[in-house]
Length: 19
Image (cartoon, rainbow, N blue to C red; front, side):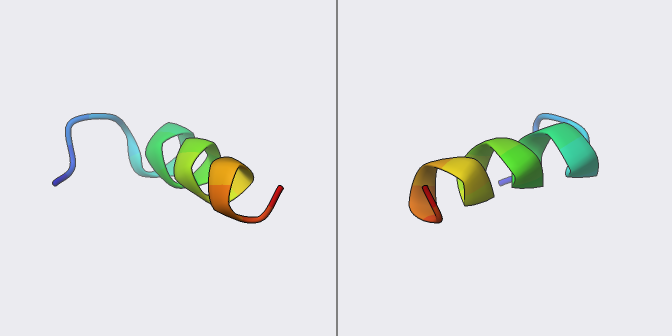
């Protein structure tokens, strides 16, 4: 479950969860 870079991937997911 890691297609995008760590920064982009995490930031995107974290941004959606911790909105």
